[in-house]
Image (tube, rainbow over all chains, first blue to last red; front, top):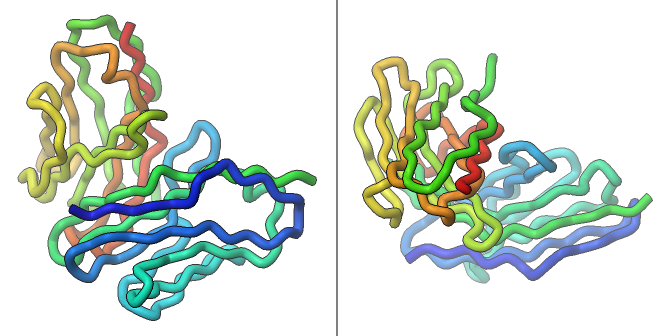
Length: 113
Length: 114
């Protein structure tokens, strides 16, 4: 079945540092890929998405590129802020009428001032 | 546009009881999905409803059930509660029942089973 693997956490960075969070996936078809973020005590918010190979999703300085050849969707940001501290989830959904999201385990990011 | 709303936000129940959680999707959205989030298992898909029909179901026991009404509002029910059912239950809505469409999540209902 489908699966998403995220790098182990937690991750602690200083403000303005470069961020990379690795995500790889296994899927039978041509999935759409998502990054969601969860702040303490809240639900999940969509950060960015990509629906086909080589698409780049971007939002709030975060970027991720859909790499079909390496089945990856790594999240990057050039300069993190304290306000980026949250839990980040990589997820996929298969194409077609199925809306089911398969999530990775999530990774906690803490940014120090 | 109002977001996805879930009620109640917090619930405390005892083993053996049953519970009903409610979800109101974004206006105009017809697809509602439910997820369970626990520290050990992470985020797991429960089921999805579209136009009052269950389109997909995750790997959960029959104690977990749901339904969707004609106004797209959805409820999920858990019967004979177990300690392991303690979790954050998240509802998500989307405009279409399709994998490319973005799902928008509510704040969740925190269920504690004692």
